[in-house]
Length: 95
Length: 239
Image (cartoon, rainbow over all chains, first blue to last red; front, side, top):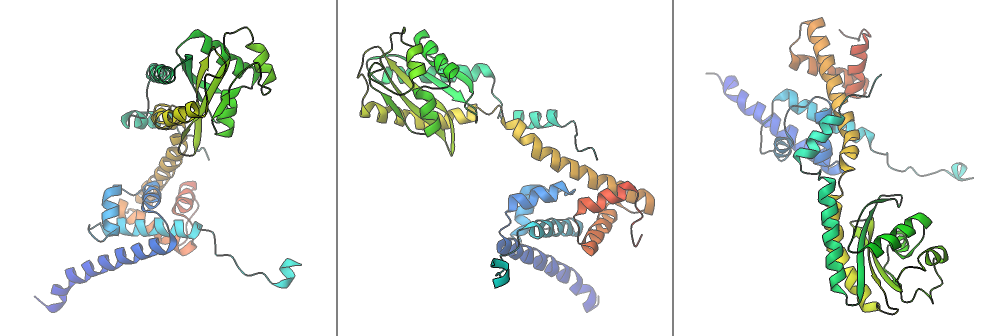
């Protein structure tokens, strides 16, 4: 067994950990709630239940790669729909 | 695009499973029992009633201990004014010490002049942020009620409102329908698009979903928009 073969399961697990950690961070920063995320994920074809999705977000449960990407996409759709931060007006905008 | 799917029955099924739906019979008997308990809690009371109202102040169900209450109450909804409607609208308890001295609600007072009702106290039923109705006591003598009966009725109204708001869930399946329909509609849309791609490009379901995600990412659009285009037969880029 080569080093490469040995490291594969580890690195894919590490990637899943990283993917769920960064999803968790994105949700925290954007304030998107887990329930809303699951609903969007379900609405675009997600097949995993809310409880399992919640556990995945906490990095306590493993999901298939396709479902992870679908969940990420659902999160990004919700984040893109958030109102942008208010911008500072120029004097001309106020006059 | 037809967004109307026959999902009303499905949402009703879900509401049934979750126990949200109670029969009208159960609501009416709960309301009647509540009115009875309210009547016995304040001496001098000749009748008590509970009315549940929808968001526009229309009465949806009611319970009474005595016919007099039914008549005095019905008059309020006919005239569109009265102590209970005021309690409901202002979300504050209303005390009417003597109907012959009172100056508010002239129409209603004229209409109930023939009934043996002299004083009334009414408290709104507030569940969460919503006022769902009013609880009221009627007495044949003036000055039967004071501030302490108002306080007592309010203590009574708080838990009653919480209970009744759960019973009054007949609107819940309708509210649920909207969200459920939208959710199941897009889910169906995405899955049909996957089916089309599987046939058109010889993909597995998994690969078809990945294809959709990739295109949604590249074009910075929602998955459902990409799916709708696939279904509309628009030749997608990169296929």
